[in-house]
Length: 227
Image (cartoon, rainbow, N blue to C red):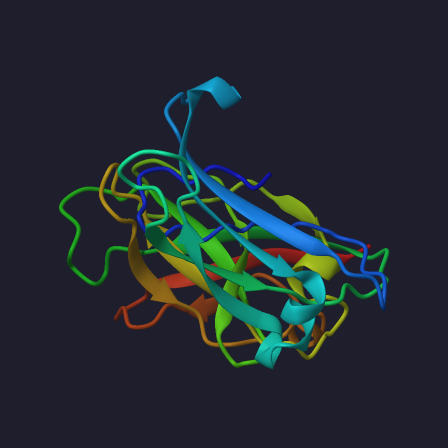
């Protein structure tokens, strides 16, 4: 099961699913999408079925860039039976064997220099990594910091395989987002692209400009280490 995404018609799920691939074996997968009515816990009696899609794991692996787009079909009875209820994008990648852990401490600086905020924003950041087809996908979402011009997010440790899958030259970027409650979260700005290899060669704190903001808006990696 993935994480829950609140109030979004175009959710991007960050939590990946690890599946053992057996070459030459037919492995049929079914993806079922639900809307959750209860905020505190998940009870299948409280789920609102939206639709599902099926595909063989080998077909995803053989697809261009390891990515497929499938229609979500409503399989239950009623007025939505058989209808397309949207699409699901599935990306697959072989995991590298790695025991390394990446440790980060990150803060923001002067995030309101763009002049669009009337009050200190509630913010979080997303670490995104480049896929084989050149698009970026989120692999980590930070905690949210409420009403701060200079937020300092909780330090975190994460598996190397999650961030760069063992490739220290893999392109990454960090997006800083403004949380807007029931509305869609808004992008404040993004760092330039970088790699874990580049981070490991610098001493910290290292400011990274946030584009397209102006002035002194920056994301600062206060500390970074590999253990």
